[in-house]
Image (tube, rainbow, N blue to C red; front, top):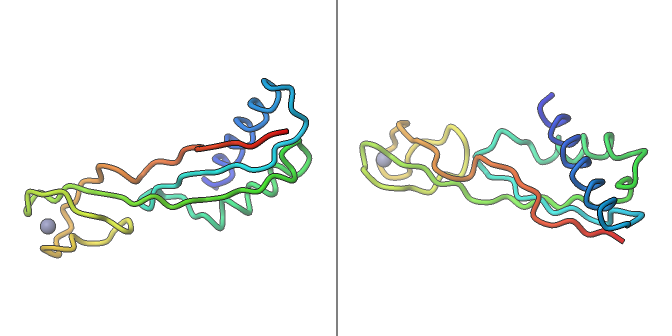
Length: 113
Ligand SMILES: [Zn+2]
């Protein structure tokens, strides 16, 4: 399960940040998840609860923000907005899209005390 590995990584990052600042708790973690990534926010939130349970991030709120994706359409010769993985080009209906942004996940902000 892909989300479990991601959740472990997120908890690790948050705990490292807390330790580095001598904080006892992680209050919240804000994530940017590209809408073209293979990450399922609900599954990630669930995995996070499981992984964080016994650590200092156990009470942390996980806020997941979906960031828009974009892709390059070869036939159209232009960049297009891509809402979801597997969707066709909104202009020509073709499937020759190359994702240029929105397939990544990153920790935007961690609140500790
Ligand atoms: Zn197109």
